[in-house]
Image (cartoon, rainbow, N blue to C red):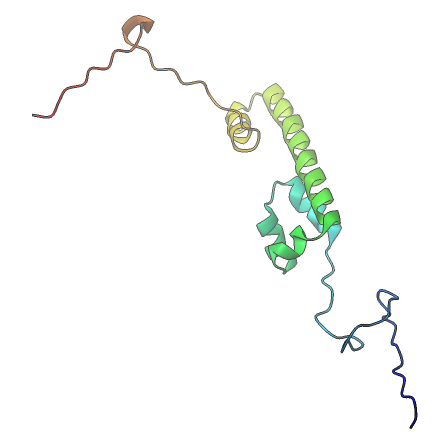
Length: 131
């Protein structure tokens, strides 16, 4: 009887021996992420879901990619810095409406609202029972 020895096939992608029934080119092709587009889209404050839709993939594909997460975070921060810079220029040019709106939307800026009674005194609330 001959000793039958199975030849090992080496994966071209990983350089490691293949396991089980792995064939050449098996499975879904790896999705290539356009990191330059990610940087630009994050810079205009796009969500991860919006970027996934623009790239044509599922958001989980992006969330499982460490380089994407790094570039996305950097792009968001750079976009916020740019927004602040433009706000400052708008303020210098006298455009306060857009300045206030963008600050509320992206920078968490809020107007302080306080309720007071007549002449700035404490607000008194009287509860009347139902009749």
